[in-house]
Length: 199
Image 1 (cartoon, rainbow, N blue to C red):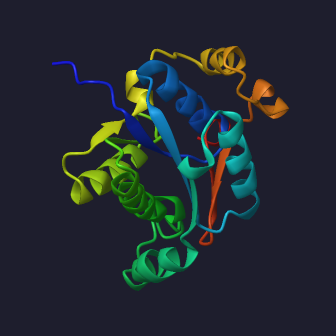
Image 2 (tube, rainbow, N blue to C red; image 1 turned 120 degrees about the horizontal axis):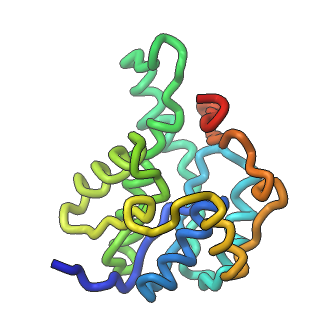
């Protein structure tokens, strides 16, 4: 059974290359109205560029949400995690992992607020993040449609993504052409780096 195309999608948006490509892909693949949500979890300088990039990609100002979730993140997620002594292999603080349910919660709240019929994340189809996002979505809104582009689209390589970005005039930082050997995720709790040579 083929599902009808979503009309309005709330995208967990960092402003990075992948989620910017996802934003444009949602518009071209589904013809959907995209609402971007960027959670301020203490990553600082990434927030203003995310807004600017969303505007450049045709998102209306009222469809750009950048919410300061720092206090809720620490109070309701980080502190309880520390009380539970949840540290992976004795040293990894799970800062990225513990943030995902909060991002999912706020995405669902925004979806209800704007009348969206779908939510979307940029987690790859092989990692734990997709599970963290999606369990959060379904726990709060069991009938929500979840779009996971990395499980759906036909892009097979980083080069395909960059070609799509160029075709659709998505700004690409120069270092992306040389492709950094890792990615960094930062918030108030910690900064984690992963990918390629590091793995």
